[in-house]
Length: 230
Image (cartoon, rainbow, N blue to C red; front, side):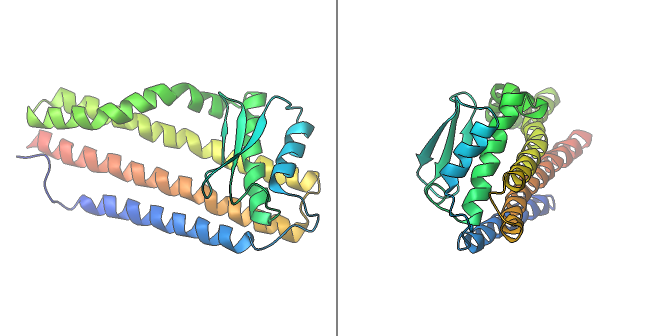
């Protein structure tokens, strides 16, 4: 019996895709709403980031501008915090929240936060597994080799593991960001609520991705497990 054909398991892929689209639309909508709300102190995102890093005793991280929309990220290898065009130079509540979140990652790296260290350490394995999983699965299916199929599923599982570890990393970075913004009085309480909504919406995209990739793994197990029994 062939491994690849239309069957009911496609509903799992559709559910995952819909969840990711809804989460993405939500974060964009929430960000667009609060990028129109400016903080009362007139602090720009890059200024907030610089202050947060300085107060955390981090003096070797550069802050740079990067093109794009919500392409913000922290690179631990380069020790660079990059803020997107819509964030850098903006004094909106949304931009401050995003900048503080990326600072949260820099602080995690600085203090040796275990989940982010694990995530960074397994990146090469995850990249290999993600690239090799489907070729191994297809080869195993073509030659009807159950061992290769199982190896392919295990390789795909590395991507699932990466997403699982990413969840606490992202939630912790947001928690750190909101606490710092409150402690350092960069945002007033109503503004802080707006930043929290933006970061919560962003966190939900990682939850949606986690659910989607779990559903995809479940689909592979159902398809190949059933064919092995047949």
